[in-house]
Amino acid sequence: MKTEPKCPKCNSENVYSDGNIWICPECANEWSEHLDTTASAPETANATIKDANGNTLTSGDAVTVMKDLKIKGSSGVLKSGTKVKNIRLTDGNDGHNIICKIDGMGTINLKSEFVRKI
Figure 1 (cartoon, rainbow, N blue to C red):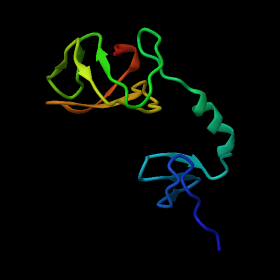
Figure 2 (figure 1 turned 60 degrees about the vertical axis):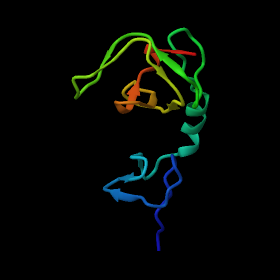
Figure 3 (figure 1 turned 180 degrees about the horizontal axis):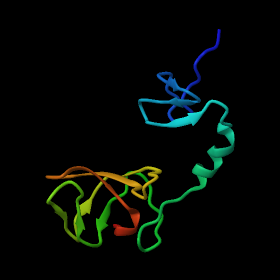
Figure 4 (figure 1 turned 90 degrees about the horizontal axis):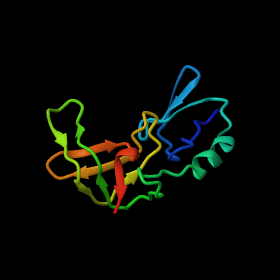
C-alpha cells in the first residue's frame, strides 16, 4: 500500500494528487511526484529580501511605504509615508514578497522595492 507524501513546504498531511502533481490545499504548493525536495531547500534558505535602500528585511519588521501605490481591484490608494508594522515575508512568485495588514484596507501584498525599513 502506497502512502501519500507530506507537503515539502509546510509538512501538511492533507495533500492530494492530480495526475503527476501533488497539491497541498493548505499552502497551495504543487510539486512533482519525483521531485527531489532536498536540492531546492538550501536555495530558499539563503534568499534574502531587501528593501529599497538595501537593508535586509525580516518577518516582524516595521516598514514605510515610499510611493503612492494603487491597489488592484479597488479604487483605493496606499499613500506614501504609510507605516506598516509586523510584516510577514513570503517567496511570492509574482514579486510581492511582503504580506501585511493595513488599517482600513485589510491584508495587502507588497513588493519590497517600494518600502523602507524603519
